[in-house]
Every structure is written in C-alpha cells, then in structure tokens.
Length: 346
Image (cartoon, rainbow, N blue to C red; front, side):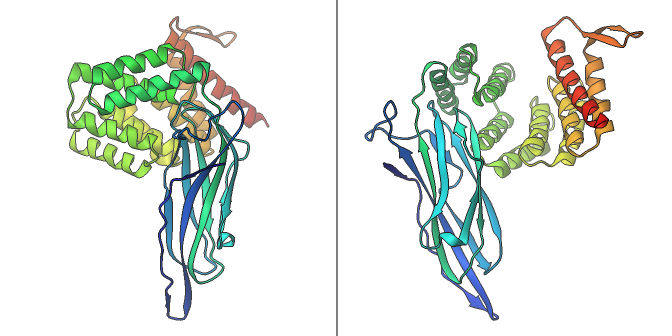
C-alpha cells in the first residue's frame, strides 16, 4: 500500500459557554493507492489526484448540529483513477459522514464531489481522516494525449502564449475526448484573441478566473470575473466574462435565475458574440431546470429557427442551414424540444 499524506494536521480547542456544549473539528485528508500488476509501483510518485482542500476546519459547532463541506477530487494527470472507496476513519469517525457517488473512475480532467458532514456527538476537539482508496491505471493511447494539455498549461503559466496556443491546438487535433477538451478549446480561443488584441490586466483576470474554476476555487473565479466586468467594461473579453459567469451559475452553483439574467446580458449586449447561441441554449436549460417548460420550449424553438435553412410549412418539416455550426445548434435544440414534448405528454 502506498500512503500519500497530502494533509496538514491542525488542532482546535473545545469551548464551553452559556451552558451550551460546543465541538470543534478538523478533517484530515489522505489518499491510498492500490498496488496491482500493470499499475504504478511503490517508487513512483502519485501526482495525478488533487483535492480542493488538504484539510478542513469545521470550526466551533453545537453538539448535534449538522455542518457540510464539499471536497472536490480532480484528476489533473494523464492516468486513470478508479475510486475504490471513500471512508471516514479515526477516533472521532462517528462525528462525520461522507456521501459520494460509487463506482466512479476519474479519467484525465474529471472531477468528483465528496460531500462531508460534521455532526458532532460529543464535546471537545474532534479529528478524523477522510481516506480515499484508489487504483492507478497508467495512461495509454489517447490518455497520453493529456500530457499535451498540461504542457500547454505550463507554457501558458510561463507567459509563452504563442507556444501554449500551439500546444493546445496539437492537443485538440490529437483527438482528446476527456473533460479537458472544452477547457482547451476555451483557452485556445482566449490565446488567439490575445494575439490580436494584446495582453492586459483584463486578459490576466479572465485567465485567472478560468484557472481558479479548473482548480475548484469557484468563489475566486466569480470574484475575478466580477472585477473584469466592473473595471473593464470596454474589454474585448467582456462577453467572455459575462458568459463564463452565467455558465458557473448554471453548472457549478445551480443558480438558474442568475444564470438566465447573465445569459440575457450576452444576448442583449453582444448580438455578434460567438457565445450568442450558447447563451440561448444555456437559458433554455436553466428555464427547464426551474420547471418553466413553456419558456424553455420557446427558447429552444427560437434557437432552432435561427439555424433553420429550409422549411416545409405544410408538413412542419425543417432542415438546418448548410454549415457545421447551424447543424450543431439545430440538432441540439431539436433534442431538447423532444425532451420537453415527452415530459409535457407524460
């Protein structure tokens, strides 16, 4: 067994006041890699799994209360990681619970939420460990392509935007199908724009926001995007920032109403933006999640109409315009309309 201690232990003293019993807790995180033939050996570093928090202080809580925290486990390497189990261990294990999807295998770029609750059953310091048991399958074939993505990130961080753009381009051309693919597409578009408009504080803010979101720092990403929108309203990246903020609200925070408003700002203020169709589609998804099926249907009908080239009104038949983008959005809108129709009919 390989024990990878990626935590720092911390102590929190117990407090008692006004007759209320209080507990304080620190959850320490550890990972254990399983040894199997054909997988990494004892003397090799395990660097592909990264947690958003190495340890977490739940702070001072009443006994019997329930406090939750989400840890994000990310595969930032080129290998594949089947997650065997996630468990709480230690003297105070009874004070914690962990809820996690079972049977997960993290491919390069994938993330997994670990939902941990602190429900203290006694007073005083409560310290336990979150143990993640996983196997390592060395990347082969297409997985090795992922090395190019991380190489591009390193070049980007070093300030070599031209080389980074080329490496992202190579990565995408080599056929990535992992969660890093959309990230690479966004980064390549950003770096190509920077080659035209130059690199300023707005570029650095937007890039920082993308990287923070990739690293699980959603609040930091939102703060950077808010600053860009407030301080650089004439930036060429303002539509990017508004769309990304709306996307975070939709995907990461399930704040559907806020996402709809932000996507509407893209539609209203940036009609020529490359994000126009994506913003419409995102609004349709958000309305659907809110249960507003008629509004969602209206949006998807509008999106499909934008990309309709031929229609036969008598038979209500439509075909998309003869280009890749229109065929893509026509089909995606059609799929969502079929889903809504099925739900309305049931």
